[in-house]
Length: 113
Picture 1 (spheres, rainbow, N blue to C red):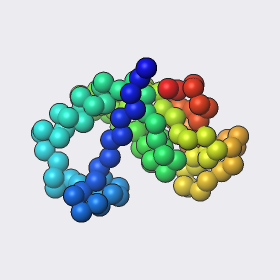
Picture 2: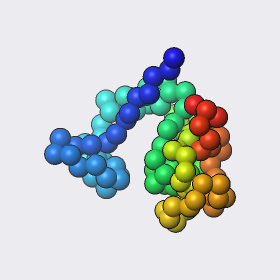
Picture 3: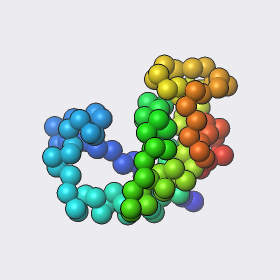
Picture 4: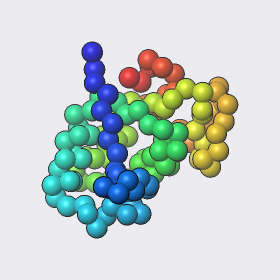
């Protein structure tokens, strides 16, 4: 049996928003190493629809010397069924074709995870 580990960027005063908007002043080598180990020990990503939209639009364009981008783009990813992601962030009904396709992604339960 595999574990599901929730990983969120959240402040002590419960700020939970796009990490790039607030967390960068707190990012350091220790956090970088932790996030690297976390990603490289994962078997798959389970994402919310909005996070999937952001990742699928951004990660395929990234490259880096540490292999982080390659790992993000090669892991199987899934999002909860019933809401198809779109590049505009507007929910679609299940079965609709997404305008943003990320390699190895699926919203069919059991396929990605």
